[in-house]
Each structure stands twice: as structure tokens, then as C-alpha cells.
Image 1 (cartoon, helix red, strand yellow):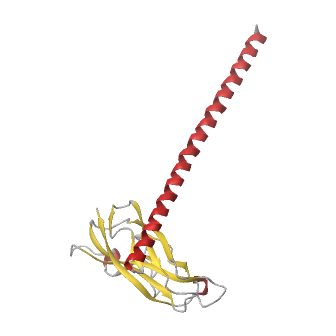
Image 2 (cartoon, helix red, strand yellow):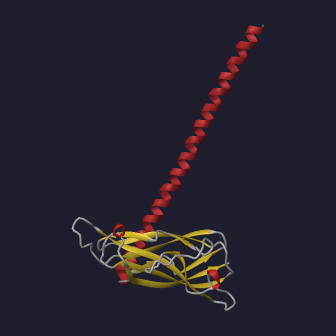
Length: 208
């Protein structure tokens, strides 16, 4: 009887193990399909936004465009928007095919007079790096995360995601300015050349 019971126990254990492996495999397959679908959807959205901004530049002739002129933001919440920058120059070196641009976002002022930009001052950089090298005062003053320097192919449009996350500020509508500067000698970012102002455009953040 003991041998029979032991055999039955072993068979039951094997069946349970097979069922567990099967369920685990199905679960992994489901998760992969979900993530794969999300990745495909995200890539598709990016491609649509890229085409939209490139067409916007072609139609308007602007050197800098956004996918939105007004951002709705909440304290501590992440959001993303996209910008398009038109490179009108060509790298003078025959072996190089891109030009360095620098991106920065400045907080100009709040709508209500009792509120101020980060650091309790106005006209302050809150993301990226200005053409003079100015950066946000602190992590709490960094409202935007982005690449501060980017290489854009000769005479092409670069489309880039910008993340906004405001950790500390009073709810209000803030006037902002996106600034783009360009390598003075039209070289790549790796060359470390000086920057000159290229294009700027204002937008608004409604913070709640």
C-alpha cells in the first residue's frame, strides 16, 4: 500500500508540475503579446507625430514646431510632447553629415503676479541648456527632461520627444519659451563648438 500511495503521489506531483509549466508558458506568451502590441502602437504613434511635424514645417516654413501649443500638466505627473527642428545647414566636413543643435526651455513668468517661475525668479531655464550654457538651477527647477544637444542630419528635420514633470510649483498658467541654438561653424556636437541663437517659440503650461 505504501508503494502504491507513493506512486500515486509521484504521478500527481508530475501532473501538477506539467500544469504549472503550461500555465506559466501561457502567461508569458500573453504578457509578450501585450507588450509587443504596446510597443508596436507606441512606434506607430511616434511615426504619425513625426510625419505630422515634418509636414507642419514644410507647410509653414517654420524652423521650430510643436505638436501642441499648450500643455496640461499636474504636479508630479509625467507627460510628453514632441518638437520638430529644421536643420538649414550642412556640415562643412565632407565626411560628416549632421549639425549640432542645442535645446532649452525657459520659464518666462506666471499668469498670476503672486506666482513665480522656479527659484522664485522669472526668465529662468527649466530644461536643457541655453546657447550660453545656462542649465536649470536644481532638480526641483528641472521641469523638462530632454537631450540638451542633438545632431540633426544635413538639411533635414529632427523630431524629438520632450518629457515634462513638475515636482514643485503653484498651480497657474505659465508662459514658456522653447529655445534652439545652432553650432556656429555647423559642426557636430562632438566638436564642442560655440552656439548661436537659431530659433525660439513661446507656448503655455496650464499647471493644476
